[in-house]
Amino acid sequence: MKPIQMVDLKSQYEKIQTEIDQAVLNVIRSTAFINGPEVKGFQEDLEKYLDAKHVIPCANGTDALQIAMMALGLKPGDEVITASFTYIATAEVIALLQLKPVLVEVNPRTFNIDPAAIRAAITPKTKAIVPVHLFGQCADMESILAIAKEHNLFVVEDTAQAIGATYTFTDGTTKRAGTMGHIGATSFFPSKNLGCYGDGGALFTNDDELAKAMRMIANHGQTVRYYHDSIGVNSRLDSMQAAILRIKLRQLDAYNAARNALAAAYDEAFKDLKQLTTPYGDPKSTHVFHQYTLVSEGIDRFAMQEFLATKNVPSMVYYPVPVHLQKAYTDPRYQPGAFPVTEFLCERVISLPMHTEMEADQFELIVSSVKEFLK
Ligand SMILES: Cc1ncc(COP(=O)(O)O)c(C=O)c1O
Image (tube, rainbow, N blue to C red; front, side):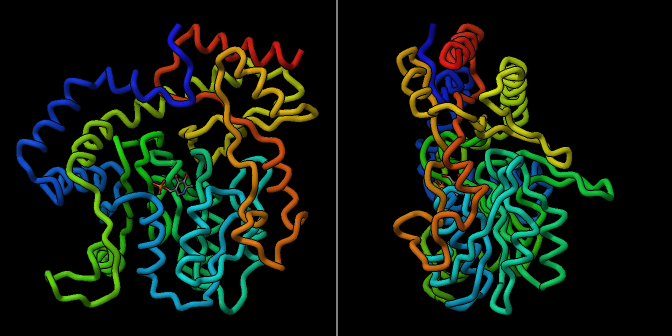
């Protein structure tokens, strides 16, 4: 049996190796390493895939979030609402720009930001909401967009974990994750559903002015070389990563389908286990299972992790500590107990291997090992 990994990038690469190797070699031979035709090509491919007017490639997902925040023209002290149950990058860029992260609770079933909690957190200083489509399923965008409209707030979707997911509104309109708010920000970190072979990221928007601002910020605040109209950053997707992403983008729907098939098999295998709750599927959103995350009940999940490790089955806890209880984000507003659902989830969640290349014998070992531990 092949060793089980949380994400098997090697087996995935082997299936597209000829194409990838050729594309990388072409970039090397062209020497168009930065802003070459592959970057423009990938941008256009992704615009088409997402049905987004503008895609702005950048260096990573954290930069994408930062550039989005910078483009909104917010002032220090302006408040930005996001979930406490997320990867740190979401809150980090808000704090870094001297904006005030206002953390709120999540829904216990979807793990995504709770619209009622957003509403309750709005003050005259609130300027933006950053929903995170955690683990691959869209947040309740219909409610979030309605709240944003009512209070004249920007919406920046953190879609690092949900590229390819779709969301259907009550009127029947369907949109891709990252294209519903003012800006979508994503990551192409290698383990992401659409991952490159290094770091990468992108911004999406349908707003021409925001697109212009974000393109300028990502390029040192210049549109004409050596003339700087705003303070910017240097954040580029390199041509080799773009060439790789063009190939992988063509597989994205198949990759997400493979993840769904694995999730369905896990769901079936674990459906009668009282100690584990399988992921909830929101009928409004498709799920692209960036992670397959269970909520444990009445067991020591770290002991479970140790037991699984003895069987060579890896597992992860995303995330053991919510943002509001992180040392760097200590704030008198947020004591332990501030967000009971978030804290409950951080104490209970456990994620199993989830990728596009799972083999039957590996799956059987994962399932039998989990069941053996629970017996
Ligand atoms: C929800 C979320 N936001 C932002 C990021 C940041 O992306 P990157 O690692 O490319 O900077 C990640 C991924 O790491 C993420 O999972």
